Image (tube, rainbow, N blue to C red; front, side, top):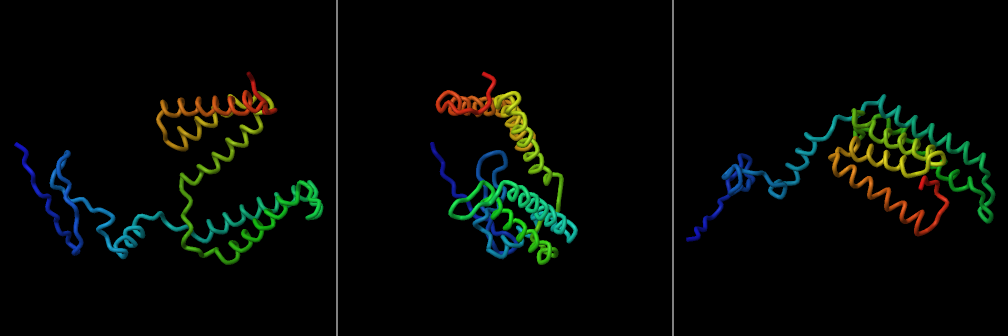
Length: 197
């Protein structure tokens, strides 16, 4: 015989409703669903869960980094030559992007020092820097030992240590990515990318 039971809704203390989970390990336990919250409750929850705001020193430091990178790119683009819009040289577009970076860095340095939306630097803030350093190392090693090994190590670092994937999925996906790049750029397109095999 099949018995059908209705699952009641249990009112929460603030007047909203919480759905009751039926079955599973803990039947009858109220579970707050996002759709049961009012916009004000959601905003309050997001305010509680967001990371601490960065201070004026962190905002200034990040602005100076953007400004420094922009100035460095500006100098390098000038060294490559700008040309004219009708006959541009390699440095023209990097020069324009560098100018935008410098302006944004200056704007953030002057106006955004007391911005409360920026997040405080934590241990996870080093992840983008780690990704950039490993990418630069791969580019530097490619002309020496080919792209296969550096790309494999890069995928492993990004997936396992930055992405928190399991070793099985990390090794499997990394091998597939390197094999796919080899098949596309070496075998199919016959490009001049440095490779070992």
